[in-house]
Every structure is written in C-alpha cells, then in structure tokens.
Length: 211
Image (cartoon, rainbow, N blue to C red; front, side):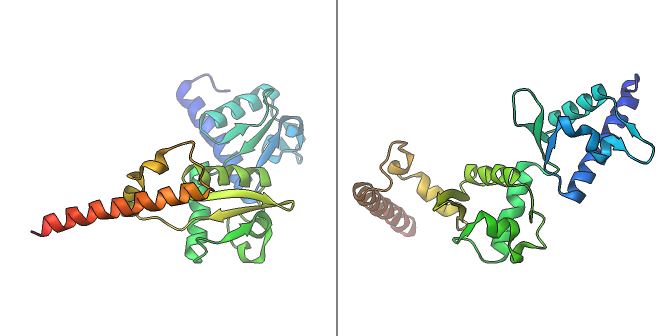
C-alpha cells in the first residue's frame, strides 16, 4: 500500500475499478475470502503471483465503504459484490419490465433470471442472492412484492403510480393504519367508504374553484 495519501487513493481507485470491471464482465456476484487465491484480480497464474492477504482485506474494506460489497456473515468471509448499487439494479429491472409492458404481471424468479426473454438483459443469470437483494429494494420502493407458492418463488411487479394517485392514496386514513386487516371484507368495505368520502371532498373543492 502506497504511503503517500494521494498516491494511495489513486492506487485504491485503480484496484476497485479493476475488481468491479472484472465482476461485471464475468457476472461475479459473490465472493468468498477462502477462495481469494482463485480470484483472477487477486491472482496472476501466468507469473504465479498473489496479492498479500492484508492488502486483499484493505481492498474489500474499501469496496464496502464505497457500497460495492455487502457482507453476508459476521466473520466477513462471504459477501455480495455490487458493481451496481441495489438502487441502480432495482431501476434497471423496473425499466426492463416497463419497457415490455409487463407491469402488473406476475413472473417467477426463474423466468426473470434464466428465461429466453431476458437473455440480453444485464440481470440475466446473476446470482439468486443478489437477485433477492434487488427485489428487496423494489419492495422498499413499493414497486413489487415477492411470494412463494408450491415451492416456486415469484414476484408481482406493480403498475406505475402517478404522483396524483400517490397523493390521493396518502390521504386515506385506513392506508396509514399499520394493523389493518388488508385481506378482510371489513377492510375492503372501510376502504371503499373512505375512497368515496375522499372523492366527495375533492369534488366539492373543484366546484368551489369553478365558482
């Protein structure tokens, strides 16, 4: 590791770029520290040279601080490699779904990861662990929900919701209640009543503005 801070920064930048470029090219999504000697960026078979273990740890910590890896275990031996951030990945998948008019549809994980339709997609054949991490991000954004049925994992990609609809829904008291029985008839009836009440309020406001 270079002693000069500016030189060290450039050194780390170069190594991080090399590692991420390799992982993107080969679609390497996970890394196990025990396999460092088999990881091409850390080992050059032609000259039989390997990076020092301490330097490898420094590189991994640098990648973590930049948001490019997430440790899977407390001992920091296995990690996800994120050459794209989870947010960028989520955007990539959602844009792909939207561009094909598939919003509102249900797909299995297998269809999206290994299906013929996704062969040209950047997320085709990525590691299932990373795929789940991306879907978690979509769920956080309210753009999808995952489920398991008969041993198969699936995802429901929601329709795009415009800002007017979001604002309207945010004014419905029932949707703010965390303990709502969302799958019950009582909940549906209450939601219908609150929607009707909200529509009436908006109509009255519109009529007043026209007078």
